[in-house]
View (cartoon, rainbow, N blue to C red):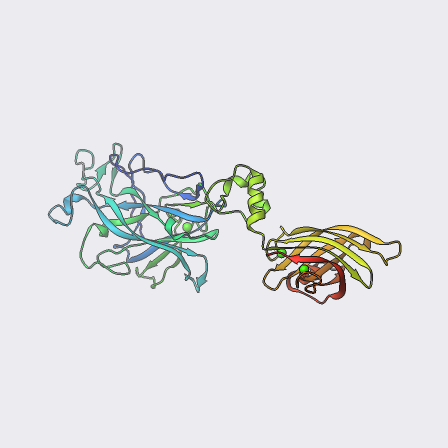
Length: 420
Ligand SMILES: [Ca+2]
Ligand SMILES: [Ca+2]
Ligand SMILES: [Ca+2]
C-alpha cells in the first residue's frame, strides 16, 4: 500500500443516522467506524492516487441475502472557503454521483468479472469545517473539540433494494467515482471531489461477517508500480479493512432445517412476512418447495404384489424428500410384508413419471428404487411400475436421481398418480 492520507476528526452534528431496518432486514457485514463524535479516519484518495475503483472482499454473516443497502464511510477534505467564489457551490454541502458495485468472488485471472449489483447515486457531501486557528495553528486543520484534523468522515448510504439481488456469502464491494483526472470518466476540472476519499480506519474491527483479507483491499489504480485493473492489493495492514456495512433482507426458506433451532426467525414467506413459529415455517417449506408428488395403490402380477405409496420430491439431491411405502408380496414364502420410509424422490410432472427409493430391513437392508409412469387411470390408460434393488446406497441414489434399469411388472388393479 502506498501512503494513505490519515487523520482523525469531527465536526458539528450533521449526519449520523443508522439505517432503518424492518423486522426482516439485518446487518450481514459491519465494519463501519463511529462518526459520532465527528471525526476523521485514514482514507484512500482517488485523485491523489490515480484511483478508479476501491473496495474490499468480504464474507457475509447470517442467512439474509436479499441485498438492501451498503453504507460506506468516506472522508472529505474540501472546505467551502476554497469554492465560495464558484457559483456551482453553496455553503451547505455539495453532491457527486458515486457508484457502488457488488461482485461475486469469481475472478478472471485476478480480476472480479461478475458484477451482480450496481447503483450510481447522487451523494450529498458535507463541507469540511474551516480551520480553527485558535487550536490548529497550521492554518488548515479543523478542531473537533479535542483534536485538530485534516479530513472529515461521513457515511454515504447506497440503496440497492430495488435490484432484488440475492447475494452469495462472499462478495467484493467497491466504490467508484470520478475526479478531475481519475475515475472511469474524469471530470476534467478541479472540484471538491479531488479531496474525497474512502475510509480505511487503522485496525478497523469487523463486528459482523469477516474481511477476507485484513492485509488486502481491491484497487484499480495506475499509481506508479500498478497496472490498470480492479484487483487485490496486499500490504495494507493495519488499514486493510474498508469501512463499510451491508444490510440484507431475509429470504424464503427452502428446507425444513432452516426453520429449526430458531432459524425460522431469520426467514420470511413469499409475501415478505415473518413466521409466527417454527411450524409455520415448516409448513411454508412443505408447500412451496415441493417439486412434485406421486401416490399409488396398485396390485401387480408375477409375482402377486400389492403396494401403497406416496413420495414427495423437494428437488434434486434434497434431504427433504420424504414419503412412505407399504408392500406385500403374496408369492414370497410366508408372504413378504413391510413398510419403509422414502429416502429420495424424483418426480417429473411433465412426463408424469417418478422414481423413489427406500430401504428394506426385511431383505437385508437392501435399497429398492421404484420407477412409475402415470398414463391415466387403469381401464383408460396403462400405468407402469418397475423397480431395481441394490445394497449400494450411492448407486441407489444415482438410480433415484438420474434413472437406471428397472424390472417391470404388470399392474392388474388400482391406480397411481403423478400429481400436477
Ligand atoms: Ca480487506
Ligand atoms: Ca428429490
Ligand atoms: Ca394413473
